[in-house]
Length: 314
Image (cartoon, rainbow, N blue to C red):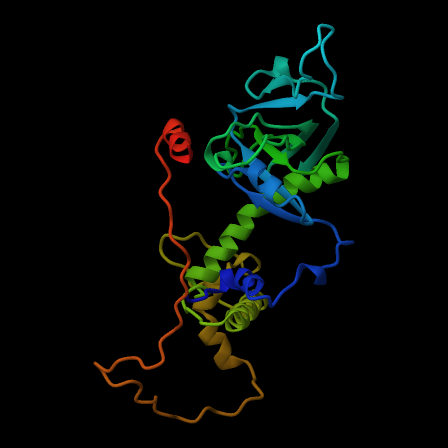
């Protein structure tokens, strides 16, 4: 199994090179941001013993449930209820008074209004990732956030954005941190795209996690150099790209003219000596030092229906 840079930390955990005890648990929780399509409730349950806070986007047609409060039975007895009343995103009449509200002026989106409802959870069933869960399905409380902005870049109409955070009992400062962190996800995705497509972050396949970590740091250094060389680079744009000022050049555009910058700046290194590459392995010969392969286990195909799955389990 070869190790790519993005999986190097996971591989280090599996080999015992990294321990969670080395982390400082007095620091703020690590924020894990994800888009719609991921089961944020399931991930929050699996990572409940780690210092992380999960933030995920929800579809606008979802229904959340309020907290049932203290366990109590009806006057006629019976089992105490587990869920409260329904909170339907598409029906404002089903909403109750938010626990926290903020209103912030932004440069790109105009006025951003955020509302938060504490201790909201999802009704879960034994299907999907909870199909093999033993015992009663737990209730995972979190904070429901609704973000509404005036407009998107380009004066486009903006629809409300629904988020769910695994943290509870938040204040207005924490509420602003949640939606601002989610908006920063778009910048991070474009950064990862640059590191992979332009700087070749995942192009090599390394055999050791330490080598992958070293390559990751080299890519970060190269990205930092491109950011610092922005005022020195010329805008070598493509015919279909918009002109940009020197203060707004992207790292990909700076990279196009970086060879011209390197010829003008001073360097403490000497002139490289011309050399010839090595012969390498002769064509047609076998590799006598192959990479080690590890068995990842047999994958079991899940039954297409719930009844078939339960019948197979007996």
